[in-house]
Amino acid sequence: MIPDLAGLFRALLLITLLVVPLYAWRVRGRDYALFGLVTLLFSLPGVWISHVRLAASIGSDGRLWLDAGFAYGVAAAGLHLIHLVQARLRSRTYRVTVSIPGQAFLAAGFLAGFWQLLLLPLRAGLAVVGLGTVAQALHWLDWFPFALAGLSIITSLRQATEWVRIRLGVDGPDKIERVPVERRRRPHPGSGHERPLRIVQIADPHLGPWQSIARLRRTLASLLAHDPDLVLLTGDFLTMEGRGSRGALAEALAPLRRFHGRCFAVFGNHDLESEEEVCDALAASGVALLADAEAVAATPVGPVQILGAHYRRRDRRRQMQALFARYPRRSNVPRLLLLHDPSGFRDVPDGEVDLTLSGHTHGGQLGLVSFGLEWTVLRNTRWPDHGLFACGSNRLYVHRGTGFYGFPLRIGVPGETSILELVLDQPG
Image (cartoon, rainbow, N blue to C red):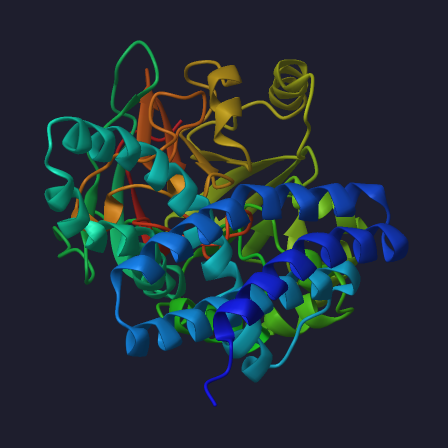
């Protein structure tokens, strides 16, 4: 007897839509219940429509595998959302079998809903002109969102290691614009007369289902093997799972301990949700937190002034003015600013800072960076998405993120594990 997997899929669809918000409301409260409900309402309609269309276009043997796959996807997505009600870091087995496939399935359903709307005029137009058979022959297009989500699991787990060389003290455009930056897969050849300042930036590590303790430790160990002059962390260290696991962040950041005196950090927006945990982890790792504060670090190229802007949602212009007034430029000393949200770069007066380091955007998270193109969904928004930007003599580098959080997948925008080389042609 062949099991009714199609019926199981439909039952799981309804159970997930009802149980997840109700359980979340009872255990965690209204806000997370609404988050779960909205997530499912954006995803499950696309899942259901795609299942109906795909089931009609394949044979009975294929339909069995289709029903099983969709039932598993819905079950994994529901279990993942239920787990977040009382979130904590889980084992590798749980992440691989539940969290990652569940999040990928939610992303596929979200994409599928919009994809089916885009295909609707094409199919209607073919039917009107009597080419319904052509429309039926294009049934393979219904697989596209799920294939994209599957491939994007690889993108989400991959981090591109690059050497990025940035020249400072050079005049730029009158308004904020993206400018070219030198990127290589291995160290840049030295010119013999310049010694760059070598920086490792850790942006948005987001300890959670995509970033385990072991994975972050490996990433840090790999970057620190290049003996950077400075390690600068620009915020957003945790996810809901990370916040629910006391001590996990300190364990993940442990490789930084031997770089005491070289490591500096600022808060991101998510760090405000777990301030004590993040502060304790940074202190245990020998990382100095700069909350609207200054540090002067000794490096092989001389002293470097580092300002850290504490994350704020409002009054950021006034915050910047007060920060620069409290800590004026030091003569002939390069000046760096750690600023989690790159949209605040527009509040940095020309000439105040040589380079601002930011993250927050995850590189745009959805885009065409994997294909060698710069476009992301954040292009032409108030957020510089990734790479190097200039305004006058000021420079902004937006890191694509050591991890990510939010939308379940990185699509076409891999994470970044870069070593920055700053050529200090005209410090101060």
